[in-house]
Length: 211
Image (cartoon, rainbow, N blue to C red; front, side, top):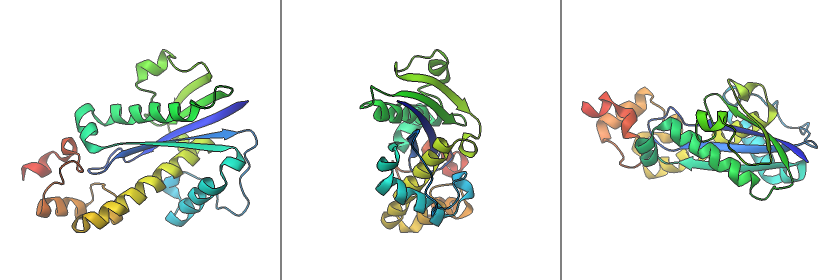
């Protein structure tokens, strides 16, 4: 059976927290439920719209031919290997997770933006599992392909929930609001409170750490 797999990430540009990559496989029997909001680029959807899709995928996805895998790479690893390699590593992990029990499937894989499987060179040499028919990286794929839109929504909701939990542990940083991005409020909190070792990406902080 042929399936389509979409892979997308969230948190690439954050100063804190993980980069999270999700993969969603969509079978030929997938059909959008009529009661759900329009599926769009996750950045153009409201939190309630994203969470409605996330809830449906979690509860009803398998019966609709949808399977999901997620991987997060934490800040210490991001600092050690850089953000691009971290995101690409997570992309490779989620693809492996999806295909581990799917030897009888043939997959067409689409990654969003600047994501690649392990690396651009690895992907261009087509060194991947035999059940993969094609792999492509497409700019703004999260606006064009259902499977990538679903992956983007899942990654966004998953990471946002993680950052809200971090806000409970570190309330002075306001993670529930900015989710780790470099807002004025977040930078001001870093200046006042210092860096959370192991949670802030020290290679991203630059001059903030020097002041």
